[in-house]
Length: 138
Image (cartoon, rainbow, N blue to C red; front, side):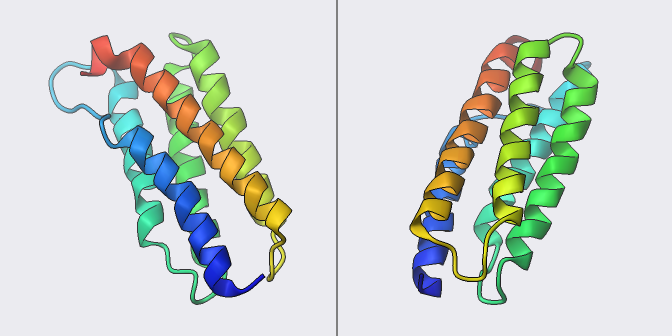
């Protein structure tokens, strides 16, 4: 698959994530720790738009590692209050990370479609958590 198609597919998947995360986030006050962790995760997800694929997939993998680290912090701080939502975040990000790690230098259409599905699942999980925490985090 040509590199331009790979870039377009990955950017389209990332755009889905950004649409869900764009209206989220809160700050300051005496909010629970998971509110700042949620903001960090949303910020790292938004960082996917600045990833350049011209040097291969290493930039995407690096950003996904950042997302995974931020998700781990969020899950740790919110797991007892929101077990279903944090489990969904963890599993959706793990699936996305695994599929990106499995990409060949010339990914197939099936692989790109799988990443797009994984990205949509991340969107859904983060949105579910954001909705569940909106009264506490704003």
